[in-house]
Amino acid sequence: METKRLNILGSTGSIGTQALDICRHLNIRVCGISAGSNIALLEEQIREFHPLFCHIYDEKKGRELALKVKDTNTTVLYGKDSLCEFALSGEPDTLLTSVVGSIGLFPTVKAIESGVKIALANKETLVAAGKLVMEKAKKHHVPIIPVDSEHSAVFQALQGNERKDLKRIILTASGGPFFGKSLDELRGMTRKDALKHPNWSMGAKITVDSATLMNKGFEVIEARWLFDTADIDVVVHPQSIIHSMVEYRDHSVIAQLGVPSMKIPIQYAFTYPERQPCPVDSPDFFRIGNLSFFEPDKKTFRLLQLAYDALAADGTAPMVLNGANEMTVQAFLEDKIRFTDIADINEEVLKRHKPKADYTLDDFIECDSWAREEALLLINEVIH
Image (cartoon, rainbow, N blue to C red; front, top):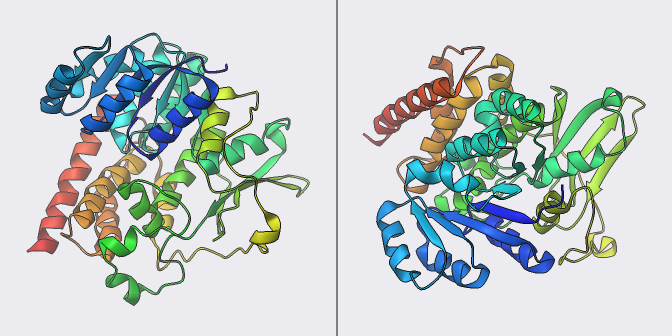
């Protein structure tokens, strides 16, 4: 199961660039890289890693990149329609899905159907269609190894134990940049404020999701499908040293600890079941001093509770919540709505939706489109 030939969806983002650091460290062959529009960084990556294929979502920039790298042996694909084709280009044994948003769903499904191992950093794939994706993975005997630090921690804590002995999963949350603030204080928080995460360096969308606790809510939904249990709790742990915990029926709790670096879970997804030296620091427990834990404030940061509600409603509810959230976060990042409007609009969209228990990928397209349209209507109401 060790990764030898890798394709990366999202090679210019935070996870993608750190994954390439691991590829340098472990000498993993990078067969393909993909990004949205950052052709400058893509060109650098092409010239260093010599991938067989490169995909860029923006068609105009794709044509521009193709001209820039015509002296290389890399084939440039571009546009939405070629994303699934890229996922299998170069015959990878592993696909790292580290793009942000539900755009990662279809190439992930395509790879699963072709027997390619998934290193999953795109949480929206399981939030939007967890039941369908896991059923396909089981049918095609494809392992899905989580890359998110929290899910990797749970995955590691489950090793060597019987699933029947699992009592609950405990996901840790840093609390984000607004931990401890009141609802009144949140109303005045700006884009700049929301992007100041205390522990992690992430993309803008995920950082805002961390500030609203939507990110943690999505991780609850993702964990439900990854580990086949609904017994999932969240605890705020500001130091981000314990990445998550598993409690067994004898009340023993196993936690995975480490410095807040994504390189550890990325590398473990590539080398599982083996472990290799990783280019990060060891935790200095004398400097850390104390580990603290708090109950999440689900009333002030109600998107966490909304994720639990969507999970309980099942079916298409989580995909609708995800679609609405992508729209509201983008509107906030463009300074069109207030920070607190994100939760208000997401909640209203979910309230208007009538969940469908069983769904297909076609249902996802329909529900995702509907959620985005409803969210946009509400965003425009706020603007005007």
